[in-house]
Length: 239
Picture 1 (tube, helix red, strand yellow):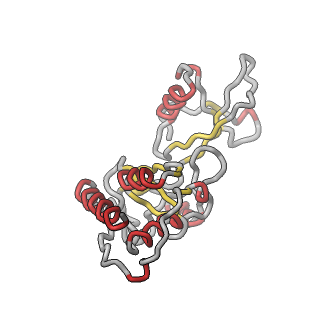
Picture 2 (cartoon, one colour):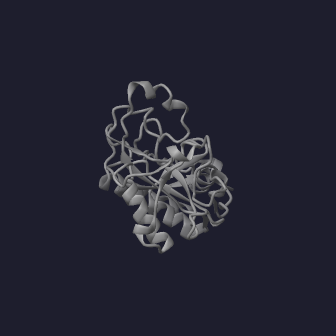
Picture 3 (cartoon, rainbow, N blue to C red):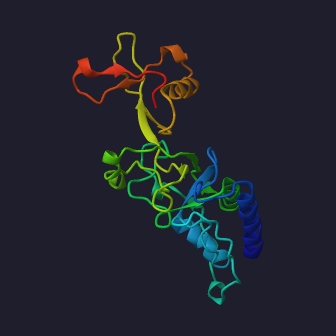
């Protein structure tokens, strides 16, 4: 029943706020806190179905909005939502990379994983998109001016420029392929997402686990330069 779904989700959100307090310095909770990303169109259809619940989180304030309010007479004939469709907010890379230009409150919403588990159990669909809270990467004054136009920049700067953490909506997308014994690339590439705060060693270990290859046989190269003399293997401690 819609009203039971609403009450259940409200309880989860209140517990989430108590477990992971959100402050001006940590607007999405402490480091490593996980959130699920969901299509705003679908989320709004569910909110209307259960009685016009407001968005769980305000992108500009970073505070949980627990005002579920009374049921509106407008929702008397509200239809049940279809299966969740998050493909509309993803690039076609297969790595669950968000589409360019997607922002919280417009194309997507941020909800607790437990809430996503509930609505997915009720309606199905997907795919499940997880993002983590990471430390804010401090930028130099010279690069700060260009940060606003960087698609890969994480959210959170608009409402808390002094924040210690932020929700990393756009991790690094790295295309990985295997090579033959001559070092020639095979056509078996696959895209992976890595946090901008991850070290090369951490990325290597994750790839080792994913590809079932010894970590010592994995090399991450800097191909920023087209000339081979300026290409080199990245050091394990780099991020």
